[in-house]
Image 1 (spheres, rainbow over the protein chains, first blue to last red):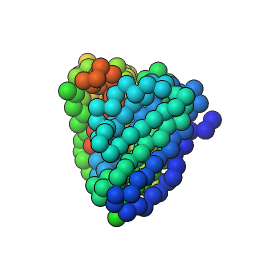
Image 2 (tube, rainbow over the protein chains, first blue to last red; image 1 turned 180 degrees about the vertical axis):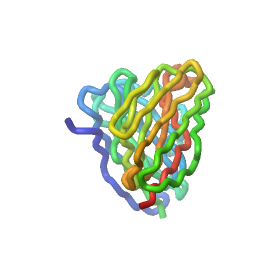
Image 3 (cartoon, rainbow over the protein chains, first blue to last red; image 1 turned 90 degrees about the vertical axis):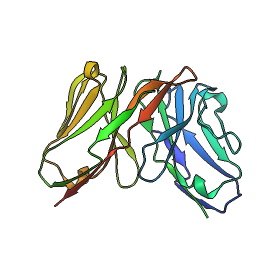
Length: 112
Length: 112
C-alpha cells in the first residue's frame, strides 16, 4: 500500500514569490494534516482536514498561507508571498478517524 | 494546554548499548505515538500505544496513561538507530478538535 506522497521534495524560491506543495494521503484516510517543522524542533500543526472540511486552521498564517482539499482526497498548501522565515520542512500526514497518523517525506523549502 | 516533554534532549551511545527515552505529558490522553525521524527527515512510525506495552524487535514502548508518561526502550543499539525520536499526543485545541502535538524530540547518535 502506498504511503503519504508529497511533492516536490525540495524547493528553492526567491522571497516574495509564490510556492505550492501537494499531498496525496493514504487511500481511505479521511483526516489530513499539514505540519511545519523548523530545524531542531518538533513538527507544528498548520491545518487539519476532516474530509473536505478544515476543522482546525488556528495556526495557519492566513495572510500568506492557504490550503485546500478538494473532493476530500489530495491537498495543496500555498504560500504567497514567501518570506525568508518560511524556510522549513512542510510535512503532510493522514489518518483514519483520528487514529494512527502517517507522514510523507516532506517538502524542504528554502527561501532566498 | 497539554505540554509534551521529552528527555533527554540529546543522547550518545556506543553501538550495542541500551537506552531509555522518556515522554511526559501534562494531561490525560487517549493515544500516543512514537516516531523516528531519520537523517533524511522521514518520520517513521514506531508505536501507536495509548497504554500498556508493545514490542517490535529491539524496540519496545510502555505507556502509563494514569501517570502521564511513556518510555521507549532501544536495546542493542545500531548506527542505523541514529536520528531524532519524537513522541506525539492528541490534545483538544481551542477549535474543539484534536491536534496531534509533538515534543521537541530526543536526538540519538549511535557511534560504532
